[in-house]
Image (cartoon, rainbow, N blue to C red):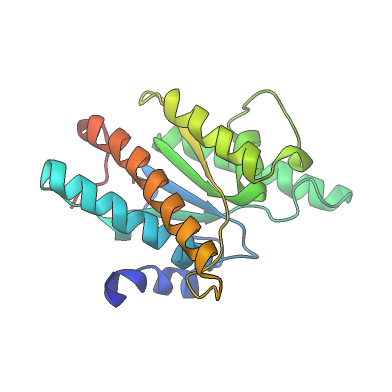
Length: 202
């Protein structure tokens, strides 16, 4: 994998205070602000695989610089504080309005906090709460989102947080690499199928 691709989002991470990218893009990423490196460690390998499959099938490339990246509220469901709860509620309403205005199709989240935040924004039921989510349940939610993908609406697609590429445990890296490929393959299939409905192309 080229260092250029791996560093593609490093400037985003450096600049990411609350959000960056283009809201009109059909792909939105939601990151826990405590883990901005998820863009480099998780999304970059997945995006590499997506670009590869999309190019082989369509001879087209996704404009990755346009992808909209936004911080989720990191304290959601974890802190009992009325001022924080009010801030979370305001953020949810504001983001809900943005979803209605821009109509993104893929809402990709990293880990439990970001996924629960987006679930509340999209008013997804049932409300399981933040403590419900773990790697197994997020994996099941990913498969459910892929099986029920609907291009007419915003689709929440949760990704499990995994170890970075610098892991000293080779087995962990091999497992993560397989996870990246599997996830990318399924997301790419949806992108290819609905290519004419997505505002993502160079």
